[in-house]
Image (spheres, helix red, strand yellow):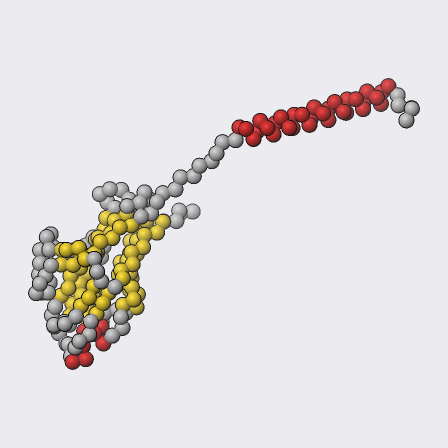
Length: 199
C-alpha cells in the first residue's frame, strides 16, 4: 500500500468528496421534497333521495276526486280489503333528489302477494311526471315489480322532483274465492344511484 502515487491519492480524495457531496444533496433533496408535498383532496357529490306516498281522499272509491287537493300523506302500508267491483284506489308517489349530483332512479313494488285476489285487481300507472295512466297490468303482478325508472333525476332545485301516479282497480268479476282476502303492499323501494361516468 505504500506505492500510492500522487495521482491515485488525488483520485481517491476526489471520489470521497464527490460521494459525500452526492449523499448530502440526496438527503437535502429528500427533506426538501417531503416538506413541499401538498395534500390531494377529492370532493365527491352526495346521493340522497326522499319519497312520500299519498292516497287520494276518495270516500266512494270511484276514482273521481280533485287531484290538486285530494291527496293525503300515507304513512302505513297500502291495505285493500272488503273490496267491491269497480272500486278504484288512487295513489301518488313523489320522489325528490336531495343530493348534490344527479342519479339514476328505480321504483319497485316489493314482495307483492301471490293470491287469488291478484286476478281480480288491475294495476294502472303513469309514466313519470305524466297525468294519464298509460300502463296497465290486468292481473296484478306478484313478487317484485319495477313500476318506474328514470336514467337521470336532477339535483337542481325545481327539477329535482318526479311524480308517479298509480291506481289499484277492482275488476267486475269478483267471486266468492276473493271474499275475505286482504291485499297489502307493504314496501315500495325507491333507489337513486350515482350515474357512472361515460368513458
